[in-house]
Length: 449
Image (cartoon, rainbow, N blue to C red; front, side):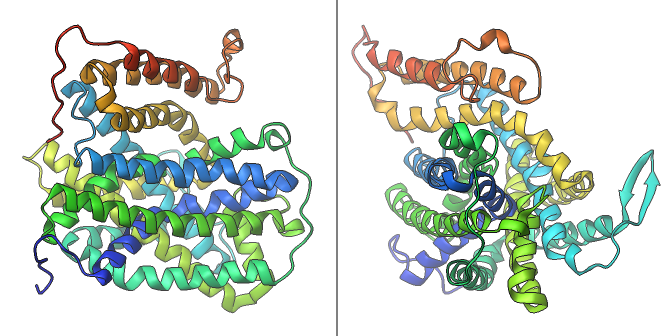
């Protein structure tokens, strides 16, 4: 192989490759479609909205990766096995076949393929559902290719980290420079929630990228890749994982800031857009014509493809460990088929279905990261993990029900309930209470093996 690492050291090129690959895993569909729309709607309040978005779309995933490294990849080990498995399975289903992976195919279609078609209205009926023919053919091809790439995971670091990502980064840098250099329209007025609470709205908008949930998974995937590269010592793994996380975070922040600015200065180009993909397409078509469109479609397709492959192979590995009787390859095929099926729901519908689910699960993921960093401060870490996550889940469910459109105005007295963050204060108090309770027994060291 020639890649075996001497005494847990990796070359600078390999470390950069790992960082680029981490960035490519994250830079999927949501990262390209949410910032332009948020920037457009935030208007003059762009700075606060962008700050909020960066907190949940860059800061949290970075902290999550570091927490996974700190727990040596076993971030859920202090939870009861059933709860840990339930949380892991729900996260894998959300970022895998239910929402995030199908969304990559949809965004690749909407931004990378649809603009080149003259007529996309042809549909046919199957089992009472009306399906778009162009979208169906595209998503079948997209997930077919993702499946093939995911079936050979050993080649993943080299193909994604060293070939696809540098091309992707170059194209994004080009887009970012153009946003700054070519004057857009004046920044407009803020719309809706961005008028009143731009910061909170930005924070919640960052949930949609699903990157914090993905970090829990990618962290384990990166540790696995490091092991295969010969980095076996936990301390060295943590070190390289943190370096990769920092490279990825810097890349993501750069992309988000330029896309926010693109949205805010899009003016008429953003009129009537139902998602950020439309704004992006309109912008590139207006400024660069057909050749720009070809470049953008390549960027988006590459970004979505690398993310889809990462998600499908992570799901395959996890479910294969959970049910060893079914092979990794079978799971990859199954997940790819489910993704291709769900991808034919349509982008706007998929986003609206996923929001309540994310509002419920995100608080639990954030709480898990918080307690991982504070494990040594708890007299009884096991109990603390269980109490804090239960509180986060309980209040997360309330936020989720509210996002689904159920009337929970009875609970308006709760702090931050209107903003959709009712979980924050109770979870914080639960963490504080667990830190203040001193153990009556002599303290036993918790060993995170």
